[in-house]
Amino acid sequence: MLPTKHDSQSGEARAAKIRSAREVIAGNGIAGLALDRLLGRIDAMIAAVLDTQAVDRECTGCGERFSLGPREAAFYADRGWGLPLRCPACRRTRRHREIERAQAPPY
Image 1: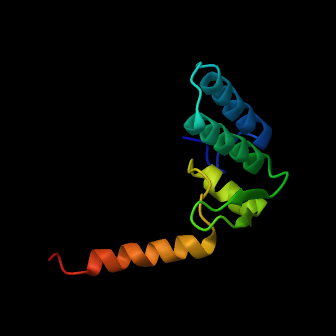
Image 2: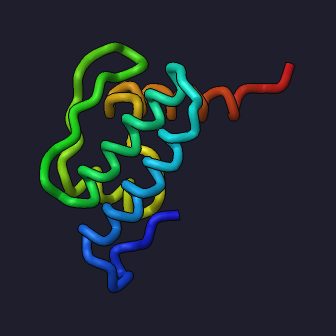
């Protein structure tokens, strides 16, 4: 889990820890699409921790490009969560669909 913003580490120290974990994962000798996605998410987390830029993503739901501001990306990184793969509209739609499915009768 990544350190929270209440920890005494600077953004650069936290980014260095993430970079070292990325090197271990990348040096594992495993290749493939899943690894590429994981490394992309790690790179996005490093950018978020450093608060240097917004993170641009392509939505896996609709294919549209969307951007996470530095503060939003840092929110996810500080909690150790991966950055969202879906745009806000697709996340909202998916959340509503899951709520409806949970409330539907079991037959």
